[in-house]
Image (cartoon, rainbow, N blue to C red; front, side, top):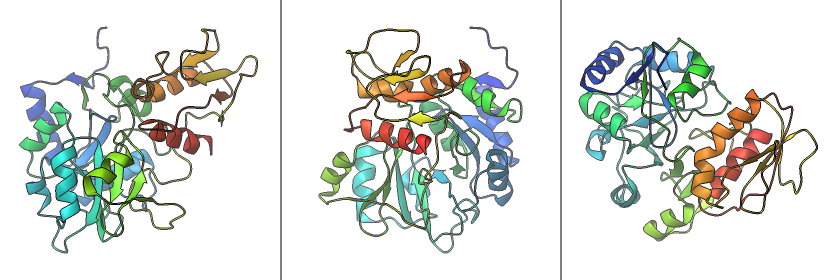
Length: 317
């Protein structure tokens, strides 16, 4: 399909240089990652980070994830502990975020970290963003490229639907590989999972040889994805339904559901990874079709299914 948008660019050497210059001037860009598309700014610049919060209409108490090329570069800003090294060696670069302690002499914008003594860091695996991070002399603060509380974008068109021409550079990297945000693990206190994502808690637990806990009801927001209402398509969701109400959208998973006008199947093959890839795009489609409600069938709560159910539960709040 022909690109009719003047702010969407295919990645090449010229756009790499242009994007790097743009970020150095403290402007924002939208970038593909393996999880979802992100809104990126210079993590060392209060001006850049403040722009992110304003454009997203994001609460100031909700910190951003800082993206680095590798652990060596992150060492300038954060304390590296044994747990981080173990997980980094096995799972990074990839869809996992680590909450660690921030160094006092860190150059990171205090706005990006919501004035916390901790910081959420990630090492993305997407080739486009890795080339850009390697080129830059600063890390990038990157939340999802959407208005706060809404569905995350999984392709460049989704970003345009969120912000129109308010972002001058959107790099098209195709559809996001995972389709849901990174797993977030807290390594500053007792090992805990702050957000479910593409990497299951059991995999992390096996690597660390530790039991995990999940954070519930904490007043302090240590990472994104912890707000009660989030990932909303803008219409009500009713969870764990066995059948649909006539004329409403029915979001299902698996082989047992027949095709029908109002049925939207996340994966006819009963594949949870495929379901995660399709989740946000399907919810956007349903909203565009002007349905008033979405009835959601039960989805297995294992592996990446935990992330899918977490997103649906928060969207339903």
